[in-house]
Image (tube, rainbow, N blue to C red; front, side):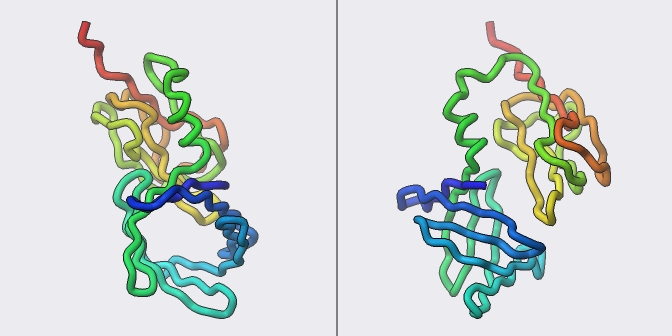
Length: 174
């Protein structure tokens, strides 16, 4: 999957990330591809080997798409947006009004639910996390609103297309 990654000061760069095996990743940046062996060695720590060199990175998630990464003694403030999110943001005017039902995009296991029925959520706010292919994927609310329904529980295995949750938009101020 491709991500548009940018620093607060820099121009966005397209980063391709493909899992090529268990813990093995192919990363392409500006046309250059590297192969990385990576493992999560702590809640926010990743141990990586690239070209025989070992690195350790600490990743602090600051929101749905914002991260602080400590690597080699330097802190990088990054924003990473995947292709789907970017396309949806670009076509926000095409999003239907009314309740928004969110379905699983891929099979996986529900490992965290951070929103409950009746909770207010902002657009892009994480509601639950699905683990797929040893990667945790935060599933965010597509709109600002109130969670109407949560259709899954922690530990549930879901298939692509499984309903996850529904968000009602805030009432109009007419």
